Image 1 (tube, rainbow, N blue to C red):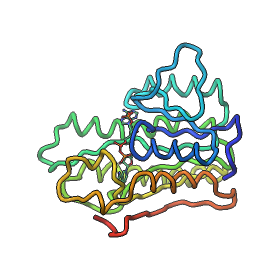
Image 2: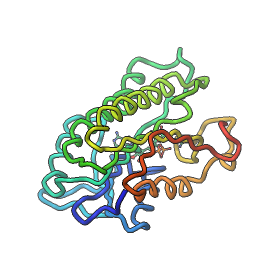
Image 3: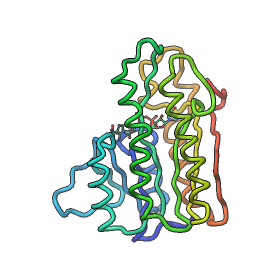
Image 4: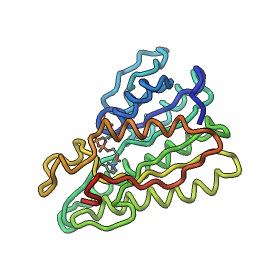
Length: 232
Ligand SMILES: NC(=O)c1ccc[n+]([C@@H]2O[C@H](COP(=O)([O-])OP(=O)(O)OC[C@H]3O[C@@H](n4cnc5c(N)ncnc54)[C@H](OP(=O)(O)O)[C@@H]3O)[C@@H](O)[C@H]2O)c1
């Protein structure tokens, strides 16, 4: 993938913390023009332009905020070089202890928002541009106390597989990354796991950012990436 030009930036959806924050930082290091969105991003004043390197406010659980964001972005940048979908949340509890409200909220953010942002932003994509989704080891394997998380990660993988076939004739690349444990807030408070066994978040972000620099003829589709110990 060629370096994004001034007019064709890369979007990191979910750049407030963890993997997305690191990807945005590392895209900047690579000299890519990139900007992020998340709940804790900068609030833009009316008519204010998006600046590269910054993370802007958008709550992706709210459909109206997705629509408003894409509409504003499109006015400044009609074409995007690529998008990283790095937003999401964990829900790690025995199935009997998950309320329907929690289940629904998990799917609104992790799946419905992913669908809506993809749908709305597709008109900004061109041949050679890319959509990069984060599934997980939980996207191809089951873990205890992870029904919601495994279900949403499997669903993302299926969504991306189908979208890849749909977009092949248009030359738009769909990449799914299945990361093993990367140490971020998502792991905090979970017993039985050691930070030292996980991939440091900046190492992961550094690698993920390089996907944006691959030559056009290289088309990664599904990438599994694990820490040294394998699946924890
Ligand atoms: N860490 C791992 O080991 C691992 C492994 C496999 C897959 N993943 C996946 O990678 C993704 C990122 O996880 P992470 O580990 O980096 O966790 P994290 O640090 O908790 O990051 C979550 C990201 O999502 C954003 N976000 C959360 N709710 C949002 C909302 N309503 N609207 C917009 N943005 C929202 C957060 O920013 P704000 O708080 O500013 O909104 C933050 O940027 C998740 O989907 C996770 O399932 C992680």
